[in-house]
Image (cartoon, rainbow, N blue to C red):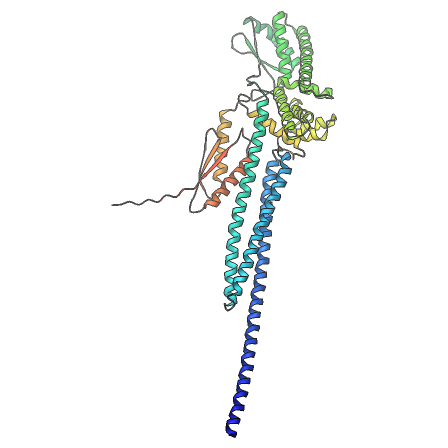
Amino acid sequence: MLTWVLMGHFRRMAQDKARTILELARREAAVAAQELRATAEEELSRIRSENAREFDRREVEIEAKLREIRSHEESLALLDFQLDARQERLAREAAAIKQGRDAVREQARALRKRLEGVANLDAEDIRQALRDEVLLECQEELRALRKDVLDQSEAEVKHEAQKLLVTSMQRLAARPNHDITTTIVNLPSEEMKGRIIGREGRNIKSFEASTGVTLLIDETPATVLVSSFDPVRREIARLALQALVADGRIHPASIEESVTKAKSEVDQHVISAAHDAVDRLKLSGVHPEILQLLGRLRFRFSMSQNVLDHSIEVAEFCGMLASEIGLDPGVARRAGLLHDIGKAIPAENGGSHALIGAEFARRLGETPIVVNAIAAHHDEVKPETLYAGLVILADSISAIRPGARAESMAAYVERLQKLEGIATSVPGVQHAFAIQAGREVRVLVQPDIVSDDQAREVSRVIRKRIEAEMQFPGSIKITVIREQRFTEIAT
């Protein structure tokens, strides 16, 4: 009996001890599971932080690309009116990025819940699986977002700019300009050449000394060529020589008298042309010295285009574009009219006509806006206002419109060669061909070196280099072709 009692007692003690051990094991298992869960949550938090930092870095890259696009577009100085719309678009894009981030966070929470059910996995396996999945999803999303943002921004900017330019160009009906500098004076007879030369060359020497030109008398029948780098001197000489030929009396005294009358006539024509231009553009307060230089442009030509007509045309373009984007048309027309004033200043001053003209306008009281527009229209100084950008654009439009200027074959060939050279200098480019008179360049890349995504970047690099290094009429299309060919021969 005692034995059974002892055995029952020991059995209860064993059962109590077993329950204690089992309870202890359960607690240890719970603590281990909690530690594993805490480790997983900590790793998840760290990965989420890394993910947030990666998003921030990608956002910085996207912002940098957008700023680069804006800086290039601002060189055209036409897109200031789009800043409000662009800010709204960036806000929408930021909201889209935030929405994408929230979606990733939601996915991270889902992953955490899923990991809670597999707490028995190794911590390193959980870390690696979570890292791979999150990184893969982020890369795809950011690549697609970057492509959409760049394509949308570039397409919208190009569309708005084209619409604005077409509207302005349609409003200006300019005639094709085929004027050329006339330096030939027709004579009634060959005998007149001898009278112009005079005894021992006395008359021709007196004429050249009075006018500052060179008279070229050769075997060409009944013609004399007037040669001078100064178009005003050349015009004075032409008028004076025509008057002498018509009068028939040619000697040093009559030469001086004719030259004096020709100078007076040219001065009147210069002032009249300047006043006509200012009145046509409805400008006021132009300094008399500026008017004098402005009128002298009537006798100057650039690649067969009359510089005064070109300046008036640029002023009209500037005024219309300024009206379209909400700027002062009067200031824009003034800057456009005076942008080439430096071409009328004597060449002995040295330097480019843009900088010389800007300094001259500054001394005579023109506003800093106009002075900067004059100095910056050939990119020799940085444009400080949108008015400078308007002048740059209007100057290009006036120069490249059909019939405006004549381009030599040598310059044309050189431009095409430079276009192809820029394209072939980009790494990965195999061949480049300028077609359609330089309006398009087709680029063949090496498919084993350049991927599809990289081919798109090659086209962007070529576009930026062409815009930075070349002066060209109109626009140039860049087409990048990536092609792989596989050939098998069956025998």
